Image (cartoon, rainbow over the protein chains, first blue to last red):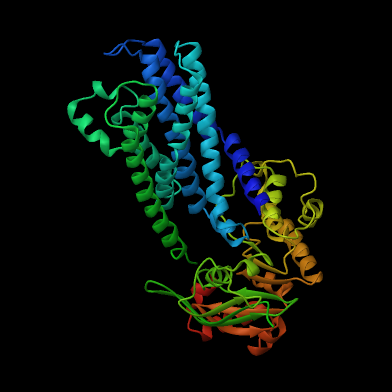
Length: 251
Length: 243
């Protein structure tokens, strides 16, 4: 039984790693943005926090969101919409294995891109932290990806195979900007700042910043609770979508 | 005991009745063809027997169990119509993954040779031709060494040569004692492969028997004429049938 899960995870990883539109963009885009905005346009924020340090946390959150939203949102929409999920469901695969494998691979890619991002921040951005702090931030970001897996699954359970990439982008990019992941939340207009707590991206960014000991709004526990709530709601939506799906197709 | 059966199965999707009181049984070692025009309810019948969809009324059983039960799933394989199979996996990786779902799968080499995939093991699925892709789906259906196969329109879109090759593999599976439910809208295919044909139209089984029975029943010489005669009797406008 354990072997089935291992095979599912291994195969999913190979599949996604060879899918360049996923693996390359998941890794390259956050690194590129961080280099442009965190290193090339380096500036200091009020309170003496360097941009390279601040944006390391928020681009970390941005990376994790991308890795999980695409893996689930686009991955599930395509496999569900074009019949592959049916083939798996008709087989003796344990039903949970499909979702466990997707989650494991999304977390693995999150880990890879965060490690690279941290290396760039430390080597070229001069970000210095005790080892425990690096580890805590990395772990918080990767685990913080779980609610986004649920959001992606909710999208993947309703969106069509062709519209899913656009749907994911329409949520991912505005959510990143308005949640203060591209430029610090304090710099955004007042209205956006007030709306930010309604976005899961904001909460993940704030958790990473708090671990970096950058002054943040609210507490880590509060932000974690908000993320958990988003995750649970989206998991419920996804569950409805997955059930509805089974009875829809005919021919 | 039949290996798979539908008893008085009706399936409604909103206002559409895809199946209306269908009875169908597959005996051990038997190849049954479910023959009918597009939209007749063939795929719905298969989806119910695979536990992917629940009947509105009536009952479906596979090896005497619920079609979605683990006992049913480990003893059957399925080749379904699928729009897109992951293309960045190698043939070998696809087969190894599906083999791992079963308790006593065939050895990899045996699955590869039974599906006619020798030499293609390390090819990415996306780099295969249409006929080769269908062979991989056939390999995924048989890799668990199942007793029962569901083949939903397995030769659609294949050229003559690939179709004949797949027929040989289907006959090979039956020769080793397996049972098959095959859906098709090719009369020739049903005639060539099936021990028994069930003709389905507008959600009802309208004729059933050996290919010879069906021809005799309608006093026609060819199966094609028999098919048209049955369709006409059941109120299908002829133009629709010919399409």
